[in-house]
Amino acid sequence: MKSNVFKYIFIIFVIIIVIVAFFVIRNNENEQQTEEETTSVEEEIVREIRLGIAQYDTLNPLLTNNKNVQNVTKLIYESLVDISSDYKATPDLATEWAKQDATTYIIKLRENVRWSNGERFTSADVQFTYDRLKENSSIYSSNLEHVTMLEIVDDYTVKMYLDQEVPFFEYYLTFPILSKTFYDTQDYYNVGIVPVGTGKYKVDSVQENYITLTKNTNWWNRDTELTLEKITVNIYDSIGELYNAFKLGNVDLVSTDNTNIQEYIGTIGYSTKEIKGRTHDFLVLNTQNTLLTNQEVRRAISYSIDKNNIVSNVFQNKYYTSSFPLDYGSWVYQEQDASSGYNPEQANQLLSENGWSYRNSYWQKTISGRTQRIDLNLVVKASDSTQVAVAENIRTQLASQGIRITIQQYSDDQYSRAIENKSYDMILCSMNLSPNPDMSLFFGDNNLANYANEEVTNLMNEIKNTTDETTIKNDYTRLAEIYKTDIPYISLYTNKYTVAYNTELVGEINSNWFNPLCGIETWYK
Image (cartoon, rainbow, N blue to C red; front, side):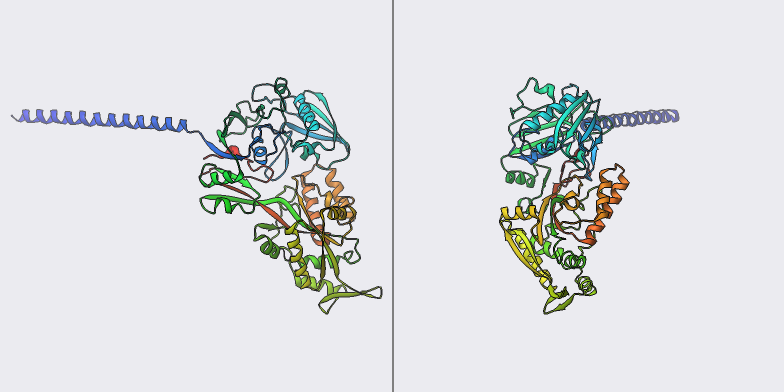
């Protein structure tokens, strides 16, 4: 009887073990199946981003007149030289360039490049692109304004001949290159045709309402991983529709220099990166003027202008103050001033130390037996209401410091003649900066301020004749010091460039105003 009990217990024990083993095995199988399904789902995930174009015209980068299209085409077509996030000229389809003499450049091309259709890239493609830019107007035609001839040396070498010396000429080699072979059988002027490119991405399809870009498997740069696999570019009839699509979450990124962007897309539901734009406004002080030939007067004017006041009252804080034309983030000048330079007490001290007296609300001084007040004219363009408002602000600020300014509002033609003839005491100027860090406008021959300085001339010549980056940076630092202490010009403010993007977007935003999509290959959603 006792043995039977042990027998039944043993049998029950075995049954329990079998049941437990069954469920353990079944559970492991389920976990394995779940892992396989998860892996399968992960493999199907396509990392992508959605962009937008308003008023699309063509994907031919030489024929488009659309800034949105121009930005997108930089992903498809490459240039001889690219511009980095800190505005440095970097090799792209050209591996190197050399200045043989003042007006001759030799350019070596990359030899391992294929077009997205598999054809070889050669110097014939550079010649083809050069000819197209020379024969018709394009947004890139000005890049070759001073190039008189292109010569093919061999399949991977070209020479360019210029009609004059052009500082930092490599910055003008940033026009997209098109395929000669492709257009041997296609109509170049047919805007509906999509050319092949050599860039990171290729055009996969063009539909009525969107364009799809995918990785270019023939891209030459095998060392750069393209995390982003697919780009959908939605097409809209107007910029208002594009902004609304972003607001609704149908576009992941927009970039603009529109200071009123928040009126269109609101203030919540997205992140922004704000950077200094390319529009730079500054005062020119004619250093040949009887009063402005005195450095203490120029410096007193500079110390007496509160740039923050201008930015606040005229631009509602939608602009940045500026102290040097290249302080937008150029690699040659990385310094950012904490102060706008406003120091009225220092202005008063400078004038007093140099024999000026403050009487009857004016600074005055006896010069050659005559009493002279600091009384100057400021030329502005009458058609630019914002510029007039800035001039009025400056006049009011300087008047409170005993410096009298009379504003002269010129017509566009009068303003242009004044610039040409340097017929002004001071003039308010605005310019669109280039990634090219050339400072000839400010310090070269016939510069706007009629300014001459032997040290500056030597620095400009050294910059022009060296490729050593340390020397270039040091020279620009010194130029900035002279600019801010000798005051031939007073930088005032720079516009803001805004990149607004979906908060779910992953990746580091390295945008600049030259290429808002710089580094997009590392982004995804």
